[in-house]
Length: 183
Image 1: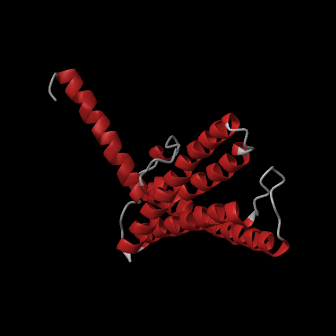
Image 2: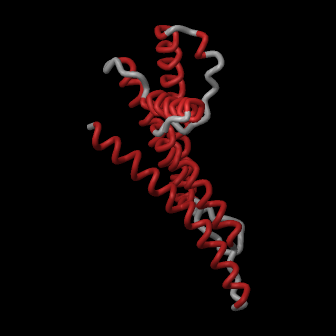
Image 3: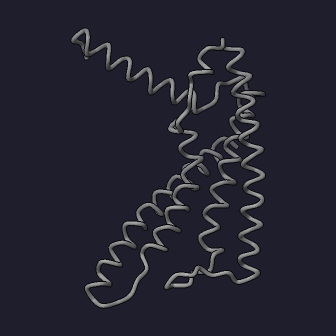
């Protein structure tokens, strides 16, 4: 199961990178289209790609410890207090994202049923870009519940804390090497 989840998060991150790349491709298409007198609405397509990239990248960045966290309050508690706060955060975040995901999938389904299209030049069916948002939110909910499981039942610290600790440790090692003259 661990390998499946890690692959899911990696695939989500790869899809996020793909949609980020597609923003650049759509802008290049608009530039070339202007030169060839072909209308292409890069603004709308880029917006859809940005939404997909953002939501699909959330679970991957959570697991990598790259989300912005405010540790000012958490750092004041001991290990037991921090564990309780992490459990509360993962549970509340997972439940919130599960609720959001359900409604995002419902909105996607309704857009498909009612044949909603974007008001722009290309009239893209809304369910197509909404899939990226719904899928990304669902994968983030899974990642938060995964972290909750790891903390509650496996007795581990959350993966994002471990990545954060490793990054801080590397920064401290670099800073120590700089002050002592050793690398």
